[in-house]
Length: 287
Ligand code: NAD
Image (cartoon, rainbow, N blue to C red; front, top):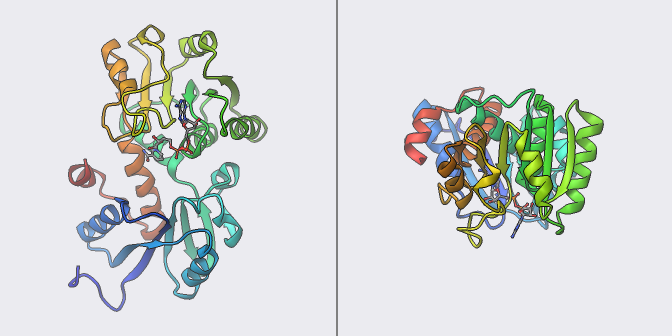
């Protein structure tokens, strides 16, 4: 690292709190080193109370950009100059680019999910998907899928604090994209069975499957699945959730959330450096 850092080294940040556990610095710095690029990626403990000053700092230091995570994703937009269409629709930002002083907010979680599907030779464009979830990850996926050309999205969520956001997401998709979205109660098992039956892909974007809900899923049993259904999870620790175990039992093609994590990073990497992240190398290092 010390040999790599020079007077020309460009800085990219990650602003969140808590943040010391993040794997993003290791991912980006490994990719810079592997490609011989003169950038450094550092995590900064920034919460809502210091976010505005941190963004001013980003401008003053002419940083190339930054990632933003909780609790700043839905707050940072007001300090930026522009938003990407997906960030505008999601009401959230996880990546900032600095184009000669013009700061643009992007959300790359949905891009990461859609790219990870392509990486698995899964083509959902023009087809129907059913997805459970209405939080940050789910919203980003649903909006990006609609923008990219998925034909129909059936969203399921329980009646919790995310329900209103799910309603807003459905409204935005139906008004601003060519995709048709509908919202259902996750407890409505009849609707769940019916919507899955004519879907090409079924996705979990809830927190069920990872700690503290490890070993759990909202899918009642394997009779809701069929072998030609594609099944994906946003969770990647554990690598195989109960949801994906059920998909495996039925013989479905399945994908966990590792690719989404990798490709959301790759999308920012490309915006900041103009270079493709060395995906196969990163899979070996991080996988
Ligand atoms: P969030 O807190 O914003 O949303 C939580 C979602 O889970 C909501 O839809 C909520 O209704 C649902 N939920 C929570 N407990 C539930 C339960 N007991 N039964 C049914 N539904 C329940 O969280 P998020 O940031 O959107 O993350 C959701 C999942 O996606 C997490 O597992 C997270 O690890 C994963 N994730 C993965 C990536 C990636 O890059 N692979 C990125 C972000 C999030």
